[in-house]
Image (cartoon, rainbow, N blue to C red; front, side, top):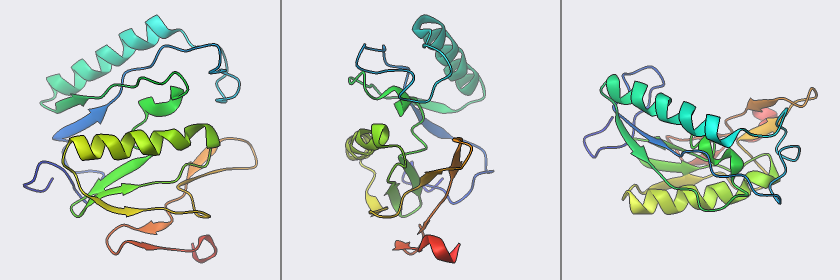
Length: 157
């Protein structure tokens, strides 16, 4: 992690600081089927498991920043690595492959501003950072060159 308290160009260096979001209470308009979940959410259990996860991180010496989600339509926002990732140059805002997750990028941008993390880049349409596979599972497709801020066409991957 860079001296500024955020960043990093590695997925294997020791984790020093992490942003997490606890599960948001589901609402009727937030259909578990629309999000591709296998069953309705068990919110109380999810909260307990998330707190245990945060404790594991703290016990490992990681500084845990806990954000807040105030929109019940942001059920997948508990995965903050999906809409944004940080580099030593700043945050890269992604474009989600699932339209239900588009508002997560706005939440990520707001959170980065609150944490004083500059936005170094953004993945713009028609590119996206996730794409559905034929089986319906989600596979990560990074289509940006974070170090240069360029977008790489999917056809060149």
